[in-house]
Amino acid sequence: MEKLRSAVIGLGRMGAEPSSRLEGKVPAGWLPISHLEAIQSICDLTLEAICDLNESRMGEIAEIYEVDKKFTNYKELLDQEKIDFLCIATRTGERSEIISYAISKGTKYIYFEKPVSRSISECDSIIELARQNNVVLGYGVNRRYNDVYRFAKDFIKSGELGKLMQITIEAGRSNLLWSHPHSTDLILFFADSVDLEYIQGTCSFQDGYLPENNSYIDDDPIIENAYYLFKNGIQAGINLTGGFNVRLGCSKGILTIYGDGSYIEIKSGSGYFTNHKIIDFIPRSSATINAFRDMVYSKNDTARLPITPEEIRIGLLMLIGTLQSSLYGGKRISVDQVNHELIVTGRSGNSYA
Ligand SMILES: NC(=O)c1ccc[n+]([C@@H]2O[C@H](COP(=O)([O-])OP(=O)(O)OC[C@H]3O[C@@H](n4cnc5c(N)ncnc54)[C@H](O)[C@@H]3O)[C@@H](O)[C@H]2O)c1
Image (cartoon, rainbow, N blue to C red; front, side):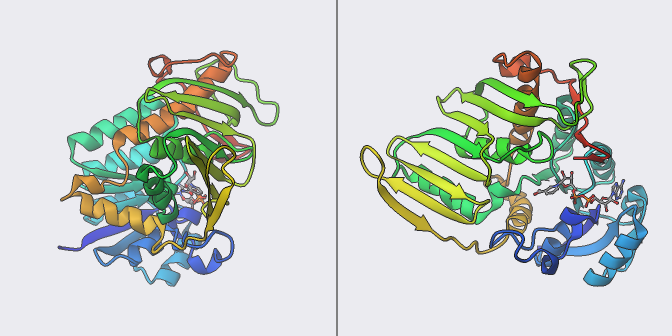
């Protein structure tokens, strides 16, 4: 296979932070997490160019990764270089514009960070453009590509713990767009469905923010609690318990992934599930590498697609729907009732998700 010419736009933490600076700060198996390092770890990709508005950061990154071609304007990069595989790790505001421009220049694989966009209609435009141009999309909800979470899903599917009934995400007091794209994506990943019956939630705003209306939220609200019911009967929830644990309640036991994939606990047996085992699972390769490989191979084998466009869309719809439910006093809302034009800026102080 001919190697795919690659580039990274946005060279901050997700785009380019080297593993050497992250060791000990993330659980085993997460590294390399940055787009740039993952590209350089995959033999099907060649790193051609990088782009960032911040020239001093770009200079530092160019030296570490030995890249010659540097751009401060992504359009110039995409005009001058034929890029097959593009990674976008800027903040969310300009993401859809960059994706559209890359597609117009013939890029066929685009991996972009979460959240996909600030509204559902913006997400729909990206997905439709990608569909029309046969572009493979990858999305920075990296836990679904992590071997620990994949192992857990296979274990649940094996049926050893009976039927999956309840998915609980314990992500602490976290923001809707900064953190919870991971939560809703994990819910979709384990539920193995995008068919929701309804969404219900309570959010709070940061620093005394009060929205002027229900269609433009200039904040990145905190999810206090959220509840989702799937048409297949699976229930899911997000609560304030911390630690980033994913609890999968089944008819014959409970599987819990603790500490963002640090280890797995399986409880089984009759009644109180007192049989107990811990699995320390070391992934074979990082989630980012798994995602990139699956994107490349999915061109010839669609079963390898790391995430479907519908999963990207419904993950965002669950977030916007949770906020909308909260704005209406915690009312249950169906998927059809979610406002596609509701914009959430994802602002926390001077920073955006
Ligand atoms: N997947 C994950 O686990 C995860 C974790 C943290 C952040 N994120 C997401 O990744 C994105 C980036 O987060 P981060 O922490 O790496 O941010 P960051 O601020 O560290 O990096 C963003 C970089 O993009 C550059 N940039 C901004 N606009 C640009 C433009 N138009 N052209 C070129 N460069 C531009 C900035 O100069 C900066 O260097 C965010 O959307 C965030 O929500 C994902």
